[in-house]
Image 1 (cartoon, rainbow, N blue to C red):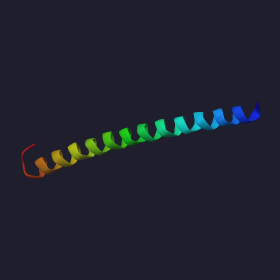
Image 2: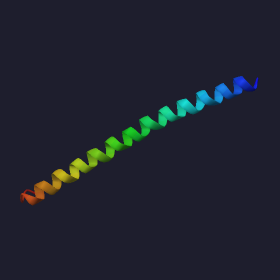
Image 3: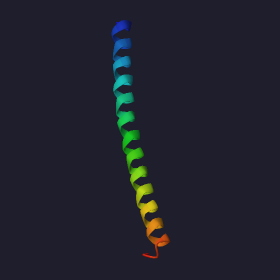
Amino acid sequence: MKRIAALMMVAVLAAMSLTACNTVRGVGQDVSAAGDKVADKAQDCKDMKC
């Protein structure tokens, strides 16, 4: 019985870890996209187009 409980805990932790990785990746992509927009706007202002 303890072995089954331990295996279930490992399975749950593994599933949570995989979900967290996808969430962190999504946040990283959002931050990167926002940084690209800021850089583009800064370049436009540098070129007197803002």
